[in-house]
Image (tube, rainbow, N blue to C red):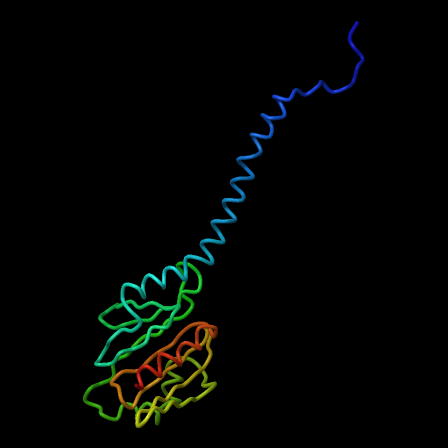
Length: 186
């Protein structure tokens, strides 16, 4: 006659240990994934920019000027012109400062930029939100700021330099642009 005992078979200690061992790799993998995501998000950007600054210094030189590279930024040299990139998350830049050489034959590029600021802004595709001026001794910078579909845009021309700065990116990194502009004025 078959047994009518409906109790579950007794689980041995060895079976319990085997089940726990099977679960541990998944828990360990989940913890490792969380640690790697946090490491990737919060540790890589400062270390990447710190290494760039350790190798290259705190400034780049261009057209006889020493231009400050802020702490969380690094520089690249595409097409022989420096570009400063802000590294907010790993492998993604949220802001770029490009350098645009102005014609050397035009000694009043600063005055021309200042006089035709609305046309330059319209050509860039953004509405002027703010106009700012920086002064250091006899040197001046004139900056336009606006917003379009791609984010914040700044364009700055200098009375003491034959180039302009073009900032494109998020508003969070824009505060560093002031330090970059002031370094050109010195």
